[in-house]
Amino acid sequence: MQSAPLEQPAKRPRCDGSPRTPPSTPPATANLSADDDFQNTDLRTWEPEDVCSFLENRGFREKKVLDIFRDNKIAGSFLPFLDEDRLEDLGVSSLEERKKMIECIQQLSQSRIDLMKVFNDPIHGHIEFHPLLIRIIDTPQFQRLRYIKQLEGGYYVFPGASHNRFEHSLGVGYLAGCLVRALAEKQPELQISERDILCVQIAGLCHDLGHGPFSHMFDGRFIPRARPEKKWKHEQGSIEMFEHLVNSNELKLVMKNYGLVPEEDITFIKEQIMGPPITPVKDSLWPYKGRPATKSFLYEIVSNKRNGIDVDKWDYFARDCHHLGIQNNFDYKRFIKFARICEVEYKVKEDKTYIRKVKHICSREKEVGNLYDMFHTRNCLHRRAYQHKISNLIDIMITDAFLKADPYVEITGTAGKKFRISTAIDDMEAFTKLTDNIFLEVLHSTDPQLSEAQSILRNIECRNLYKYLGETQPKREKIRKEEYERLPQEVAKAKPEKAPDVELKAEDFIVDVINVDYGMEDKNPIDRVHFYCKSNSKQAVRINKEQVSQLLPEKFAEQLIRVYCKKKDGKSLDAAGKHFVQWCALRDFTKPQQCGAGEMAEDPDSIPSTQQPHAAHNQL
Image (tube, rainbow, N blue to C red; front, side, top):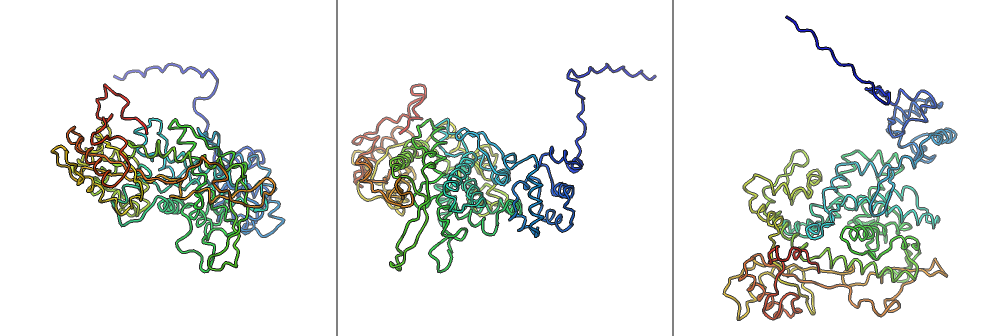
């Protein structure tokens, strides 16, 4: 017996009268049959065939012309950026046809501005990016920066320091555009082209692509210990990752369609990030290949190798101070207002009769104090945050954990080849997969071979850290790099006469040597800055420190030496403190900050959290 079908309740009509199922949307080409349709569709959705349909509708029916757009994959988002020169480069030979084509494109409802994408940045507000920059941002290689902390171990000390390399890179790309456009508007005689502006912005955007897990910890601590023979820095990684980004996402044609010349401009972008090429132009005083000496100032915007005043610093000053809760005293907007390009004459060492003229970014003479403030801000950030004793200690412990894990971690790279944490820098496909997430992957792995690394990482999470003994400084000569490895052995051997009966070995000590300066070792970076006066904005001059103030620093670099102990019991710590004091006396270093005459100062990190809940977060 079959049961009668249940009667379905009647469906209530929607209150707004709209249909339940949206009508199917026809493809873009189906809409491009009339002028109104062309005006109302979004250019960003147009494929090359849609562009050809538009051109045919406007009377351009010659197959040769349409094939140019098909072969070069000219999509709708490129149209507002085409000009007569670009059309000529593409192969549209007729001047009359080029002018007519530009006129038709300009009648479209969407302009270049409409195709720019807007980001709401907490530091710079609403910032716009060119479609080519968006194509770069929307790649796995760039998105990887979302998972790399800007201040590595600093997040464990400053809870607000949760920002990543991703937003910093956006900020640097934006500021690079601000500075280069300001120069172009103030001094049109410099002939800064849209192509130059795009390249400078791309360099700003991509300057940190090569950072590894926990940023500077990776190339500053981990790689030198894991691969001491490898002289590798994140800038090298950035230019290799940029090449990988362009090639794996097939962006050369996209760059070409936006008016760049990939053969020249990719070199120019990499030079801005890394500096002069290893093999400069033969028999030339100008070391760069991407741009001629007449545009030397473009190399001073993203990463200024000359004096360190660049947009990279401006963004991380503002961004890091914002997240750390520290006051930022440098006003980059004021610097941009007063920035000008002046020609500076140099005598060539090989031939002193020959004068070489170089164009530099200069500032008004009254801004010299503001620039000293900028470098003072940098020094304060290093002392209070970047080189915080607990932040650095956590970097050291993460490094120790990664060294223990390195032989047992596999990362798949090109053609399925396996790499370790330390060798992923040799293959950009593998390196793309290496981010801060490796910390949790190791911590939660079920591989028993990772137990030692996991123990260290668990200690970090539980705040069971190595113990800080104190800080000292050399009174005379600095410790050289080649001495660093034997310093723990020296501390272990520096046993005082009245030391507790505890055996301490070199592996029980960590000696962390930190060089803090104004960015140019022991030199004053302002000595390499040129200024101009209101009365003559074309004449570049230098300003000596004595002309500015008597209160400016006499020295521009110092060396800090911090000692930690891996043993945590009271007796061992007491003995370790006495070893440290004795070592400082033997080396004629300054009196340790946290140690008395043979007595250890009380370590706040060793006090139970119920007594001093915030002790572990004390700042210098």
